[in-house]
Amino acid sequence: MIDLEARYQISPNVSLRPERFGALAYSFDTRKLSFLKHPDLVRVVESLKDHESVRLAFEAVGVDEARWPSFLNALSTLETSEMIRAA
Image (tube, rainbow, N blue to C red; front, side):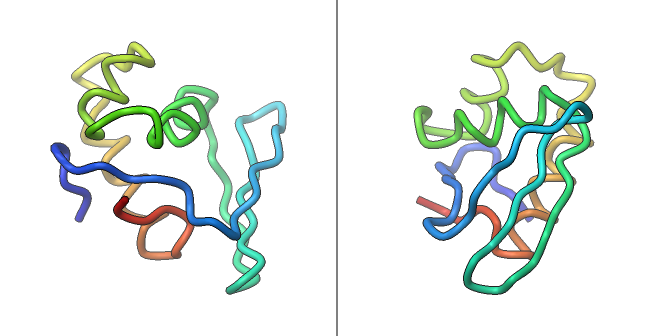
């Protein structure tokens, strides 16, 4: 589970490719492919490295607090699939 107060980053061998729906994340280590299905989620993932916590990344991107649970769920999936990691 993602810790809202922890710092995360995109894993070093993961590449994001912009798409109309959001982005594709590909891990060169695991060969896994993940779909980031909303541009706001892409902005959050890209900004994780620039913020001291997930909470601050959400706030910087302007994600409404009512949407945080679904974003945390998506980030948890990305962490499980090794697309992001604790920094």
